[in-house]
Length: 223
Image 1 (tube, rainbow, N blue to C red):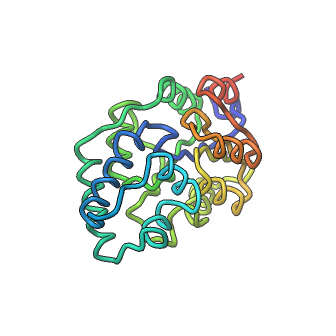
Image 2: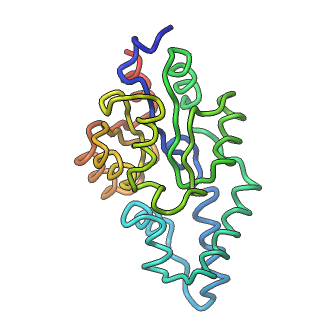
Image 3: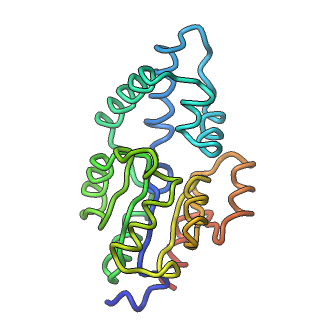
């Protein structure tokens, strides 16, 4: 089939908690371990608070502004996180690989903008989807080129010669929403990973589309 049958020519996908179930299995436990090592006299933050901080102001600000990690402590936190990501391959949400494969089969462009590392994203897609995304912008980029900065979307639009109206950003958290808004690209919220009512409400109010389930997202793309 041809991409003329699609609402959007390009999907710009978040990875963690949009495509894969990674926060409860990888990111939160690795952060707890880092806190125990770096702040042994402090009580680790709860899972709900961790998700809330990742929503706003974002994970980088959680480390630098709230936890006030030094550069050396940031490096230690990264090493612990990388140990978790290298040893654990998270599962994709049910129906997500099938949805993305169908989009690809119809001629769509699949890209990923994430705070995960590119090598991990490639591993996950090869294992669960059987292909590599057409472009990946991950944590290995300098800070000013990572989400929520506009560089990843601007580069995707430039690289694939796309208009803003031809791409859709899918993310579960606010940094992706902010990046899409800056770039004038439509935004869809991945509501299937939301468990905190305040986050669900904000994303519903601020997103152009909000999908409670991947089934809803699938129908939106192809019906």
